[in-house]
Image 1: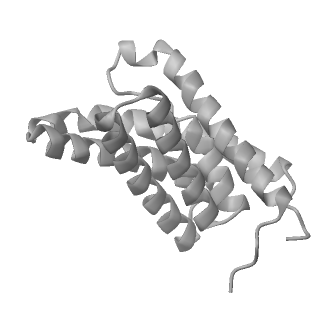
Image 2 (image 1 turned 30 degrees about the vertical axis):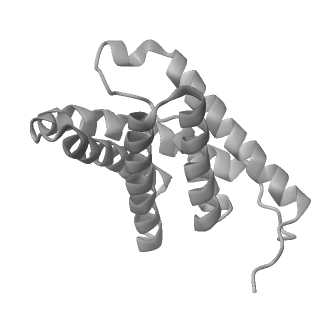
Length: 169
């Protein structure tokens, strides 16, 4: 039987979801995609990687999905939901696999998440748009996903080391 969540845990999860949403909104405000459409930094993944290492897989997955759902309800549409969910779910699955293999650093996990998020979105676009032609854009997104993943992994690694885990869990 699963333990009840404490008030402190609920507050921590709420803060992490809110932080992921704020980072998503900040990213939305940055006109980075003007030069290269579809390229994003993936700032909210800092929170997901942090939660994956600090809280566990279930908690990190819930934080990731709730952030996608809440941001889509506030600023998106049905297509945005499909794209975001496909990227988030594949990204999370790959990050979890890399974490379980236990041969990758935070940076490797971040890169895996960034690259697979882009792959998930391209696959979703291929299905929704009914064309394989969009796959030609994948190399650009793989490079940007790698660069963003490195940054996400470095930042998440710093946070994981600096924020001490609660020993009373």
